[in-house]
Image (tube, rainbow, N blue to C red):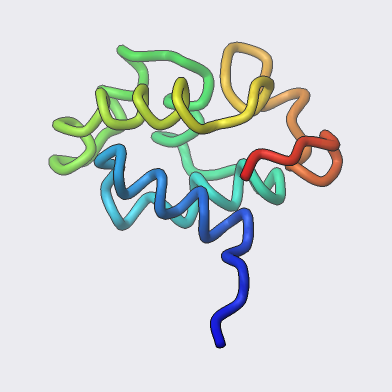
Length: 100
């Protein structure tokens, strides 16, 4: 018998569907679920800073910026991304958000 997927597993699946590169999914999911600050590139993505994100992107992420936008707009909880997110977001449990 298989159990119900965790919020992290559900978000990871949605990130894959959106086209987020595999090597960045864990960092993005840890940010949303646990509030663990990711690296420089993902911080720029989370802050909605296109030019900054592009400047920090590796060759794979440079071509995937649209996928991050799709994921954040379609699946990430409000408050987990945007200009103030790095200063205010503490994770799903702290935010009291159930975003399955």
